[in-house]
Length: 173
Image 1 (cartoon, helix red, strand yellow):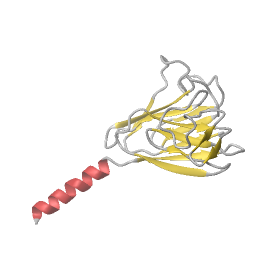
Image 2 (spheres, rainbow, N blue to C red):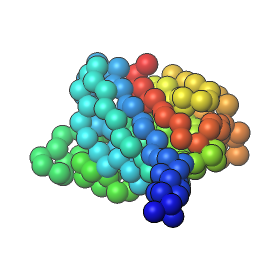
Image 3 (cartoon, rainbow, N blue to C red):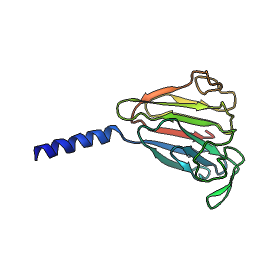
Image 4 (cartoon, helix red, strand yellow):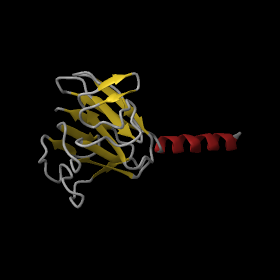
């Protein structure tokens, strides 16, 4: 009986240390956008003034979230003026430039998470990106400088925050 209780306690501690990060995505733009994410998040419509959330598992590496604009979908396929991902509503590959990117790696547990904004492949919408235990990043136009965003691959614009943090992405802040 005592062994079962210890095993249950260890499993509970492990599960708590490897929880998902919640990304709250807000659309402050004057029209609908279609946020997309890989490897987690797929794609969906988000009306003006609306907020939606996605959960990203601990251990997710090289994740990206961006907003597509000027989209028209019929079922799961269509096209977008910016950030299009092969004509699919639910993305499984990166969007076509230009697209302002929120990039992240979720460590989970007591390790660190890392996040940044990138305009290396172009800029389509202003973005705020923040971690609940880290810096608030702001990119209002294509020239947003490091450390706010990556303009070039050799820039230093990656930020760290505690593992098990949550994130806020606002488009058109």
